[in-house]
Image (spheres, one colour):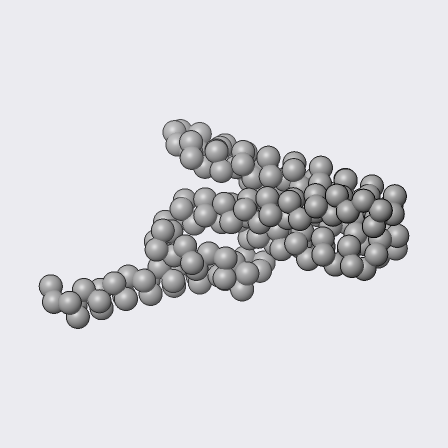
Length: 172
């Protein structure tokens, strides 16, 4: 095979993997976010549904861990938070940590997915991912209008939690 043929073969394979990601993301609620979060992993995912699912869960888990860190840092800003803000942020941290645990459970279950009861195992995975999404939405709800929380704090936290919830929704 010539160098040109090898380059063309690689390009065609890469395009196939990209098309797989695009097609898969088109069925999600947030296709643009899905594509932007998964396309960097196209060569690892290839056209494998299990790898797509695991990568999607991993991306969501990483975003949840980052959001947890950022939200937790808000609590360390002593004196700059009201008691209402502190309570809402503490609740949010608990919810995000629960979400992280559920996403980890899902990934662990994906690694062990095999045998005659695959459908049951997939059902459990979907339940954990759905629970993670519920926890993320519960955190997000704490920052809804009407809460006595500064716009600065609200915007910083909500933006990150919204992204995590959308990534989790896409994984589901």
